[in-house]
Amino acid sequence: MQEKKIICTVCPIGCNITVRGGGEQIKSMEGFGCKRGEAYARSEFIHPVRILTSTAKVEGCKIPLVPVRSSKPVPKELLFKCMNEIRGLYVKAPVHRYDVLIPNILETGVDIVASGTVE
Picture (cartoon, rainbow, N blue to C red):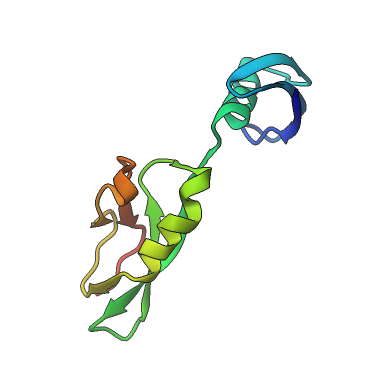
C-alpha cells in the first residue's frame, strides 16, 4: 500500500492530507478540511495534473519571448515532453493573448496558448 502526503492548494488554509491506497484505489484519507480538499487530494493521488507555463521564442520583433500556458491542466507525467515541444517552437510576431500556438499538444486535447501579446 502506498502513502502520499499532500498539501492542499485549493484554499489558503493548506490542509495536510494523508492518502493511503494503491493504483486508483484509495483505502483511507485523513486531514482534509472540506469537500474541495478531499476532491483535490483524490485527484492528486490517482492522476496528478498541472497547468503548464513557459515561454516561446518570437521572430520579427524586439521582444524575443512570449509567455505561454496550457489551456487546461496537463498530466504531470507529460510535462517534460510538452516542454520539449514548446522549446522547439518559433512563432512570428504579432502574437496575441489566447492565440493557439500548439493545438492538441501530444494528443492530450490541451492547447498551448499565448498568455501575453507581442506586436
